[in-house]
Structure formats: structure tokens, C-alpha cells
Amino acid sequence: MISSHRPSRLVLASASPRRSAMLGDLGLRFEIHPAHIDESLLPDETPEAHAERLARAKAVTIAKEHPDALVLGVDTIVLIDGRVLGKPKDVPDAEAMLATIAGRTHTVCTAYAITAVDAGIGHVRLVKSRVTLRELSPERIAKYVATGEPMDKAGSYAIQGLGAAFVRAVEGSYTCVVGLPLCEFCEDVESLLGEDWLASITDAGGLRP
Image (cartoon, rainbow, N blue to C red):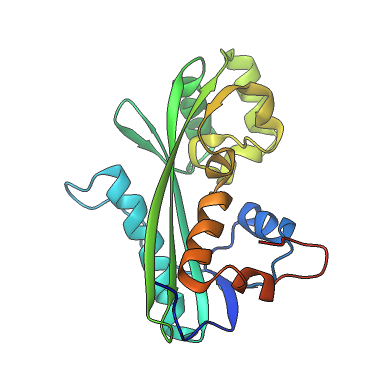
């Protein structure tokens, strides 16, 4: 159902330069107000529920401060063998993560929440993709980690950066792996706010929903 009280602007509750770049590539005008929350896994919480909870918490936290805006909160995790791989703590952690997923297929889960207090909107969606990496020698892993690129990435690689050279296959949404499933996000916003809302916050030459 389309809200009759449409938000006046878009706010990204994330400091991720990748998510900012993706929204910017669509020509969307938006503000950045990162949410700072505890991202610890709760007891007995599934990885999928964890990602959804964090995305919702980020969006709700910032939406309280900007009730007239549509706030986007996002969380991405990497799963393999039932383990959650987040951002590496240090160089050895990054190298260990890459050694674990090299030559294998893992799952990337990105949850996003779109919240607007004044419009009464609260929506969460989880998108999954499967990624297969080629085999990587310890020397190649160390050389890649030394570039610094893996250090703020879930799973310790960037599919949109140097890490693209390691990706053999992607099943599902590529932008989910980057950190924001753009097709699904646009689809949900259009459903909630109408097909013209994104156009109303789009610069000339950008996305025309």
C-alpha cells in the first residue's frame, strides 16, 4: 500500500562508501547519517535474523532523528560452514578468512530496512547471493591483504575492487554482494511510495524509474 505521507528526502544510515557510490550512481540525492549500534550476535540468533535486526536497528535509530525522511539501514554478512564472517579485526584475521573461503562457495546475505516515521513505513528485506572464489595461495592472499582493501569488508574481499580477480561465479544479485541489492531496494520503494518518488529525488541524467 502506497503511503499518503511521503518522505521529503532519503537518508543513508551507513558510512559505507560502496553503498553511497551505488546510490550516487543512480543519480539519487541523499544524506549520510551513520548509525552507531552494537553489532554483536545475540545468543541463539540465526545469521539471517542477525542481519535483519541490525539493518532495522540502524534505520530506526536514525529515523527517530529524521522523522520526515526515508531512512535506509543495511547490514551485510558472509556465511560459510554455518559461520558468520564479518569485517576482519586485523591482518591475520583477514588472511584466515580468505584462506577459509578460497576455492569454495559462500553465501552473502544483505538485509536492508527502509523506515519513515511520519509516513508510517517500516520494511525489512533479506537478499542472498552465492559467490565462488578461485583457489588462492597464501602468498597471493598476503599480497592482497597488504593492499588494505579487505580490512573493512565482510569476508575480507571487495567484489567491486581488486578482489574481483578472485571471483569465479556469482549466483544471484551482484549488488547484494557489493552491499546493497539495488533492484530489490528500488522495487520496494516504488511499492511503498509510488513509482515517481525516486524520480523526485533524482538529479538530471540519473535513474528514471
